[in-house]
Image 1 (cartoon, rainbow, N blue to C red):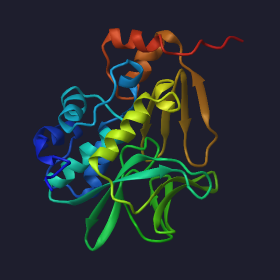
Image 2 (image 1 turned 90 degrees about the horizontal axis):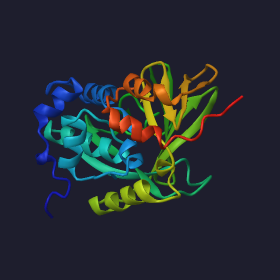
Image 3 (image 1 turned 120 degrees about the horizontal axis):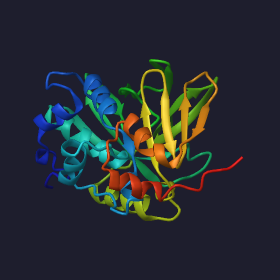
Image 4 (image 1 turned 180 degrees about the horizontal axis):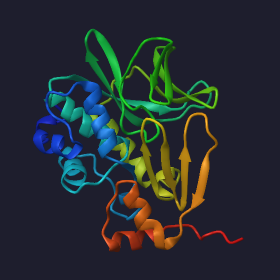
Length: 269
């Protein structure tokens, strides 16, 4: 079978320049570099442009135009770069949360990277997830900055959890089924067009670093950390462009104006 993922279509040098990394960086450094440089965002959905999962389109948007993307764009871009750097990469669609609690479709794309005799879970496209890859070991707990993650093998699937305010919360579960590119095309179509998808209902932008998670949902900006109270504030129409700029998205004025029109009405006292 031909390589359905087509990693060789990515300009690796341009990618490394975009994320501020070099070809001799290790897996963790490349992961942190993409996470730090490329915001998680759904703005093209809200602008009515849709989202392409064709690698050249992703590279044009993220690498050339300095934009961000959501999980499919993040994972396909990172997966191609890692393959070109010599890593053994598998793309896998995961289920948000824990299917034993609430079954959900396979809608979140992650990477499994085999290196050093272990399989590592890599994921820069969850928005509020990993800072760098974690080894898939049953019951393993990994500290990354202020954040703690745990991997558990449950009925043949890997569940990733994060510790939040003293409790383990399941982020997603990675089943053993093989993922093909056509699966990603279908999942992306539903995620970017379905009225049941929360990505079609409002602006979603997220940035996470070693201490703080910031995310914008509609006109509400949230600031969160593992053990501190959640802070929230309302973003007014006239400051949306600056907030997006602070989150790493530098948009033309016409796009900001169009996005303001998607915001829900501001609450009045």
